[in-house]
Amino acid sequence: MALFARQKNKLGSVSEKSAPIEREIQQLTEANLQEVFNLQFVSTEFAHNNLRIDSLCYDPENKAFVIIEYKKDRSFSVIDQGFSYLALMLNNKAEFLIEYNEKTHKPLRREDINWEQSRVIFVSPFFTPHQKAAINFKNLPIELWEIKFYSNDIVEYKQIEPLETSEKIETVTGSKFIKEVSKAVKTYDLEMHLKKGSDKTRGLFRNLQERILDLGEITEKYLQLYVAYRIPDQKINFVSIHFYREKLELYILIEADKISDPRGVAKVVPESYGWAKNLRRFDIRDEKEIPYAMELIRQSYEFNKNR
Image (tube, rainbow, N blue to C red; front, top):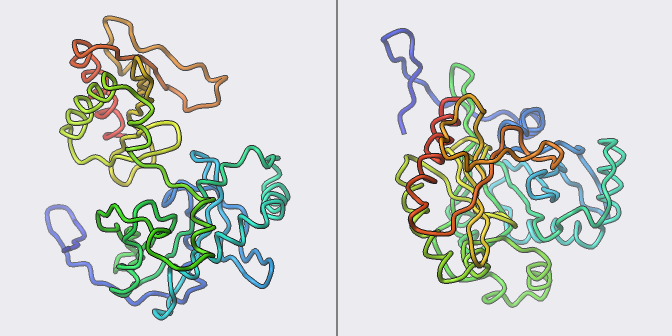
């Protein structure tokens, strides 16, 4: 990848700089959690049972805690350390909940938390090939993010994407400890959502999915309640799809004066629901409704792409 800084009609080269100390990477990330990871900061250096968590965060979309660890040492095991932190959290839920309530002053109850969506993020300037290969399992609740520093104060966070695989870590490991944690933590996938539907709605979805991905460079994400589509590097869903036996329920995000909906099918989601502002909902029950639905989705895509 070649990076350049633009000055009028000229491009100047951007050179990579050495990474600062671990603590500076932590401070920079904690100050920009919303922009980088769409997470809420809870606390720093949270210690319990002889383990210290660099950054404790909360994921409001998944209603789950996220642990972020910062590394410059290349010798650590992402699997062993990642599952150790997850076990600490899952075995001490009350302490994590108290930490959140005391630090944020926003009361949460234990039943408000989706503990199955707990995950660990490692941030480092460099990961070894062995560390990258270690995350090549299906639905692993561990993420690797490389952070790079360049001239002109440019900073890049890039997720290391695991290879496509159908293997789950609990099926290949002999570790009872990892198997127990894997049972308590669930990462959602497309298969789980497809099972909620019927042959009819799965067919509708496949048709929609192909057309949505043809709109441009798009990321498909699987959450507990829906399949979401985003523009890369954005944390906003321009469309999300909920599966039912007889229909697909779609949500798009677009302001009232930006949408053209002559049939009036996209209804505003009340703000009392606590969801995003300018969210609109409509259903699809038949193949003939897909072209009109795609026009609404396209408008949401264009609106969010240009924000």
